Length: 165
Length: 183
Image 1 (cartoon, chains in turn blue, green):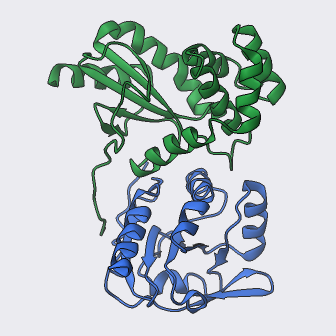
Image 2 (cartoon, each protein chain N blue to C red):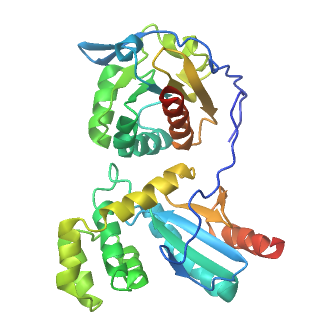
């Protein structure tokens, strides 16, 4: 395994999350601003079908009820085309939107500072965005490593504590 | 690479009253596994865990917690509940072993048959599964794993710290031995 350094500079906590509009199905688009007022989890992942991505997204599927307890929306994003997303979601029983950052390719990943130029894919990166559209937490995982969900849940706990106080 | 780094530690401490434990309480090394009965990697790890248990003897305490990823493994949740139903009859480990030794056969009818083969109170076992009596327990295990940084199965913790190395026999054994001399 060769390791290539990709100095990702993900949008940091406290910065405004760039809005976007991407297809979630061939005829439906999803915008970040659709979820105004609610926490949003953006899970950038390199590619549909890769083993690590599949495990990571299966774990998030299991956790949908937990995310719902925080009234949080989960969005997966990769540079794959929408038909790949649909086949992948169907094959792996994923019931949350997979957004297609396909044209111009990787534009949203670039806006979030997590595009991998050499590979033409995105980093494996997580963003938890608060109801005002501000990044509360971001994390870039080594691309071959499934980051799990403990960081996401901790960030959602933080947000819930803040809004409760 | 900008990354937030945190240590992955077991957030739910090993508890004699709730956990399924093999080995003495005073053992210098505790190995906790979060596993899924239908996951082939867990199936591959099963004989390796048995082997490290036999090599380390009383120096090792082994704990198993449920982490069924039903999105990928449709039978994993029921299998986990079956093991917990057996646990309510003090027969957890027999069912645990039986499930891993028969990973390809985890339909409800199979689970029922395993309960019979193990001589469990089958009526009570069936009722537990039908009523979802163990669902909450399995979910509690699962969430404790998520909170502890489990990202797939199997995930192991050695003396409370996530073990990210290989679980091939030599690597796992060496790490357990090291943890044993450190404590």
